[in-house]
Image 1 (cartoon, rainbow, N blue to C red):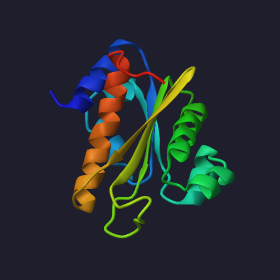
Image 2 (cartoon, helix red, strand yellow):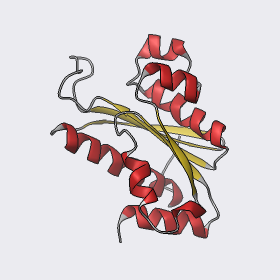
Image 3 (tube, rainbow, N blue to C red):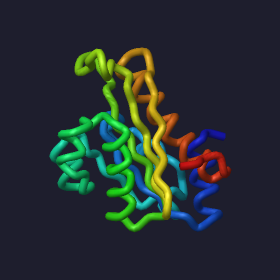
Image 4 (cartoon, rainbow, N blue to C red):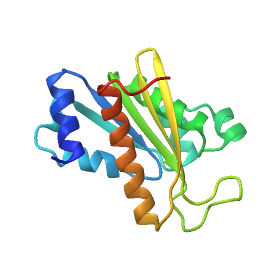
Amino acid sequence: MKIEEKLVRTLTARSLSWCTAESCTGGLIAGRITAVPGASACFEGGFVTYSNRAKTVLLGVPAQVIEDHGAVSEEAARAMAEGARKRLGTDIAVAVTGIAGPAGGSPEKPVGTVFISLAVPGMTSVRGFNFEGTRREIRRRSGDEALIFVLDHLEGRVRE
């Protein structure tokens, strides 16, 4: 069984709702979830916030967070997940921001730098990654890890 199928079954069985906030994955995660029959029982929707402005306007990410830490940062990922969860009123939100390449990296944040955040009532957790590969591979791995993060939470393996 694919992870997205397991997530839909588990979230539906527990009557939990969730949403996504995606930057570098550009809706890839939401697409994978909505391809699963019955996903509407748990998935409220997703935000594709590719630009800094979209992160601020749609998710409420403070402009100061982006200015101080960058759009690809633990702080931005945290604010994205919390903003998505607040705006859609879901039990869970997952957010992804990163540099998929091939350009856009820096010595401090090379191509493949990705932050994924999970927000639930009373807790927001962030995982950082440095993926290697093509743009397509980095985006796919980011989506995989975001889904794994939600599953880890459901199985009690996430701590703040």
